[in-house]
Length: 320
Image 1 (cartoon, helix red, strand yellow):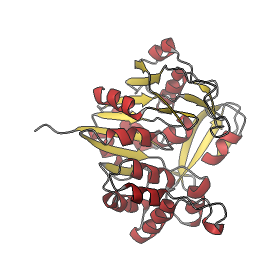
Image 2 (image 1 turned 90 degrees about the vertical axis):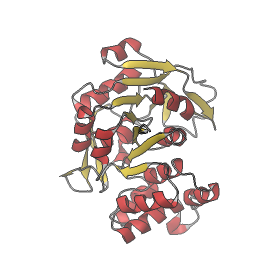
Image 3 (image 1 turned 180 degrees about the horizontal axis):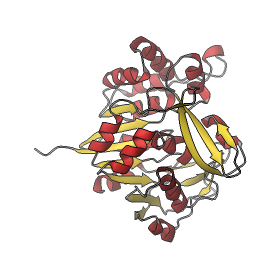
Image 4 (image 1 turned 45 degrees about the vertical axis):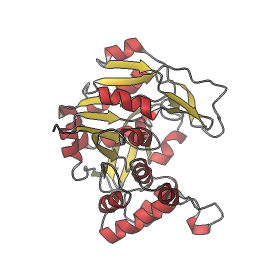
């Protein structure tokens, strides 16, 4: 019997759970590598209070890859109300991950234990075993430190890097991450925020080096919408150029681009205020980046927002 196709998905935020929840139903060996640079909200409070990697993105990936009863998932995702004092805004799952991280000595160990509990179909690895600090360098020379502060600076990001914790020490990949990248048949980047969900993983030196050297096909899922403070006025080709520039190599093989129009009248700009306009398609620019372009309808409208259709993405990824 032939081995299952090995697919690795890299990213964070609310983007990669969409792909993972569809891919986990396919007959593949699935691995998620998840960003740990978040320093806002519940994750930011917990990483400050306890020396752990931020749990929020890992929590969402756990649920996306789980086949446990929905009630268990709802309990894990329950968020305390703003009236709940010290617990206000914390998802219960973040607190559980934090507690088990202390019990087991690291967030990496906590996620492996919870993956068994939630019957995760595949593997989940934090990109690094320590919390990372994201540094954004803008074209005007200004530096912003901390993922949650980047969107507040009115400039154009030139590049990002990460350091370990609050120290200016080099970030290191988690155990098994590089091996997973090198053994993969297909690697998927995104969907997700370019500078705060995807690149924080790629600029970890060991991960960037592995992506340049891996024999796997690398697929980038381009964002649907431009993002305030990150990718304002970016075309799809500009997203790809930024990824290539950070690793100093054209390493992406295929780009999945949505060409279905997003109805401006549908978007709830109060609820999704960080998203601006639909990413402009620049086919010639993409070809100049030496990538294969798959343009199709990957759009799913729900709850007043524009999201990727996970099943449509998964179908293309499986053909890659």
